[in-house]
Length: 231
Figure (cartoon, rainbow, N blue to C red):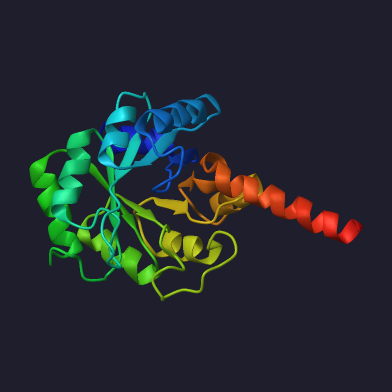
């Protein structure tokens, strides 16, 4: 799928991130593929998924697939090298999500060199997961097709907000031409709508839709608090 086709399919729509953490019961490509299928039935226009096996498991779904590979213990761990990015593309991702910050990458390549090297390898789009306005401006200059707010609050440049970083969404939307995908701490439909109002091209929601352990903990905590108050 080309940029025009994918952008038309994602514009003003919801992307669902289907990921499970290591050691969890749902950490299985078949399970993540089923979760992705359920999300599409519910109205998801795109799917974001982590890991080569998981990408392969959802590659045939009839929506744009954003693929990434989390690897390593360094600050840069979202598709951290060119080799990782090429593997994500080869697994079937339509969009390769990579760390879009200005931090040093493990293989020593710049973001621009990584994107150029990926495009030499094949025809694929790139989503830069950014943590600040400066990241987004640099990522756009480096050739990224989509700019995500994924790392806002995690790189030390911006305060971690309780919900989505709406201010950053607005700042990037005003300063950059590339489409902005709002991602990070989107916990309610109202917050997703607010992200669109702030200027997001599309919204990516993960935990609040696809992570039962966290969702359960929200309800369990609320019930426990109410029970203590009622005693």
